[in-house]
Image (tube, rainbow, N blue to C red; front, side, top):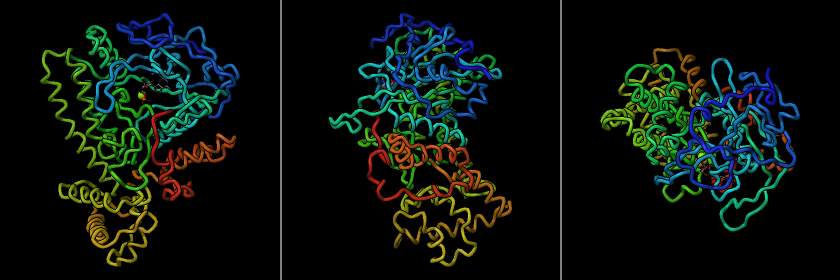
Length: 517
Ligand code: AMP
Ligand code: MG
């Protein structure tokens, strides 16, 4: 194992591309630069709150010594590091926002292991050239949320950036959590995030907006050669774009499978690798409501609601297409590629839903059953996770209506009545017959469902409780959640297989969140 302190870091991105190496941390536009050097600003009393053993082992990183902890807190950089904030732009809530950049993230260096390199990126380490009017810091609550949730997504099998450490800074920071003029001091923290790359659609958009064709071309080629090395031949760029489309569609389907709502799908939060990136006001669905957005800022238009995510994925890909358009003679190939998104998405979606429902295959007529499922669930609004768990063991004799209603009793926030109840029961009858017609055995069907439907999800109210405890110096729930999230398909953590409690329905941080983190 190698220590964070003694490792000789790679700095391929900063050596390959032009950047602003002045180290100036004052907010400004940086034309011509793909990054700006940024040394983390020291904090007063670092304390390690969590270290991700599994990730550290994968990367061959030794458990942090006191000196390593200083690196994780932003108090120390080593001689081989070239710390920087990346410059990117973005479309936020559908509007061009111009230059954004890493305002509170600093990549310290690249770590190589088994032929791959990983950015070690510190979030919450103080201002950079891109912090605009903000402080570059992150509060404990948002850091705990990112730390736990990115690891939870990893163990669910959803593409995501990861988190290596969570560190208290010992400093308080001022936040107006509800944007109502009542700012308060909250504990600060840093998270060391890890991914092969944190490049976003916005890193390409900024170069197109600034008309830096050479930088754009170089970044595209570098991205392909480094992260998509299997793409070779004449038409590399379009092949790569098609793969980004494919990965983005896959990610949307995976979010749908587990009931994840990102909450801020701006183009600066879309990973070029198709990973879940930048955990902010996200949420899992408790009750199945496609119109649910966890982000208070998104409430007026619900642009980033659960059910809109796949179409926003396409909208964002269109922005990426516009950005790389200067590298093509005309836009026909890009448009053609974009037009394939819907098909790719639906094929993956039906395949995934078939597995969620324990079907041996998805025939044409099953698609209707799947759409009916979505439609009726949106009316019944059961707890999504509990509903699918109960569906695995749906009683054989579906004709006894009361027995069926009892079986699903635990998943209802409001028990369906009248017409909704009738359509719900009819749907389950059709479904049950379809499952009995499977060519695979009943136990194989159940096994497929158990592998596809998570039994443990990191609900917002659980995160909220864990954060409240941590703020009082207790880590019992935090540690329990850390353990449970590693095994989300097992029944070992059934103490958490519960609906969102009533008290959490309207409480800030338990269902809705603001971006002020
Ligand atoms: P987000 O909504 O978290 O994706 O952030 C949008 C932009 O605001 C990005 O450029 C962030 O780096 C920046 N940002 C968010 N919070 C802060 C902060 N506390 N300090 C500096 N920049 C921030
Ligand atoms: Mg962001």
